[in-house]
Length: 222
Image 1 (cartoon, rainbow, N blue to C red):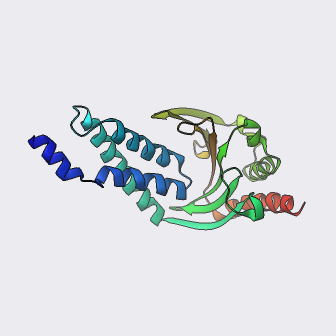
Image 2 (cartoon, helix red, strand yellow):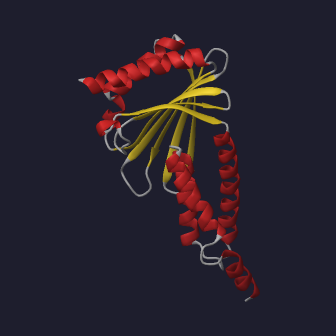
Image 3 (tube, rainbow, N blue to C red):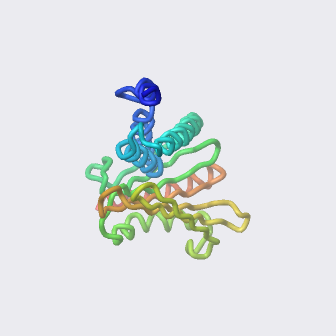
């Protein structure tokens, strides 16, 4: 009984584990960080399926502590983030779960362009004409004929029923210049996709972003 009392007293009706899971999901959605959303969702599922009086509850607490540390690191990272520009392909260029979003920002001195497609059913959506044009503009800046020419490394991570396949592309110096994340949604046949492009200086990043903007805005005028 003492163990049960201590856990109830610690967790309460709105316990720290629920708060961490909820914060990870909300922050992940706001930052287009699908990994964070998945880990928050996975923790919430563990909380629901493994009761505090179960011998395996330590697994839930360990997952909560781990995610809590990741949240702290992500918040610190956001303090060093400057959001420069954003464009969307949704109606009237507004955010949409089913249309591409393009972000330009600087994270701790590294400039990055983000291409994010929250939800899609058909992989043909990844070959959207505007998205492909935007990608070509970036390739012009980094002097590549195609990303298959770069060295690649693949990593697969699983959170509950969600699987994330991450591919990193490296230049000749061993620097990551592109990262793609392909993932499935919890309990759905829908998928999601994120691409990151990294630049060390504003001149190069700005030139690439201007090409991306032109590809998007030209399409909006048609």
